[in-house]
Length: 407
Image (cartoon, rainbow, N blue to C red; front, top):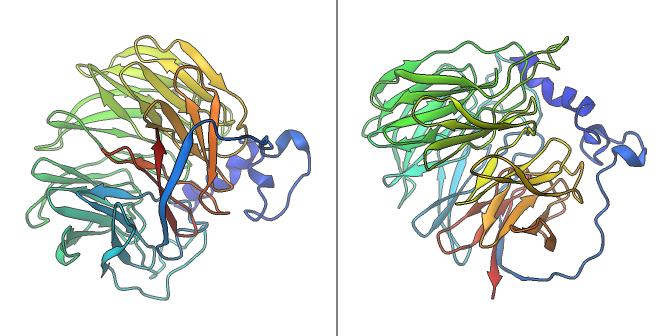
């Protein structure tokens, strides 16, 4: 496990500037070519209104969990590594309830690494929501279901390893992917285990796990060896498997090929991107490639009816044709800023960065048109967009903010 987690440090050699982020690993080279791109002064061309902001705990700090908010009904749900789950009113930011979902042991570590045999506890996944439930996962394999209205505990169970990826509420199952590669299907009513899918992992990988994504009667899971696997919700049986990237190279770092970010499902294809440097559209029917591009990311993809948006490992944001993967535009002004997975808000793509800024780009040409700062702290988790078009972003220091575009 330590070897897998340790790759987050080694990424510094492939993500130019990772070792120089101020306040992250402490100092580093002053070489301008490896520093995060300097932001140019700009007047926002579109009106971005902050509806509210609220402190929701210490945040994940340096744990690299990429925790993000979740939306259910009129609530925004956030998870704290100290064992708390909070529900806030989506329009006002007022706390509706707070639940101590997990009792802490040994105080809870705030470090990037921890020993495999540690007795420390903590909530490490983002919240999965659906069917009136909130599902959260912990460092020691805890899986806990809470009532979305009250925060009261409905049931709890345990898997064989830590839970970093977001649990998925799918039909009558709760799907949970563990850090050891196993995927579990639990009964939604009482948490009884119905099936488990087991898969070996490479010895070294990026810090993170791909979260299960819902299809029609199936789920799709990205793996550390660069593959996407389709599983049946009912029994966990594998339908198909396809490599988005083939791990190759002289060192384990060179061979890192994780599919860790958000997979998108739409029309007749699944869209995924790999740390190894490839993005791909896969046929829903059999997993065969529809198109592929030599653009990869440690994050995931955003998608609408015509576009796929991906920010690559160097921080270049690409707009690709959803039909054939052809490049329509790219935005190079945010290089080495450790961007989040993009999201789409109205007619704009949005990414967060290492200094707590959110950046809006036109979908038709990638032009940067607005920037706001949530907090002087890392944005790692993917922002989320409500059905009303409100964007919610959470920093690693526990600041949650809501933004709406004004016409």
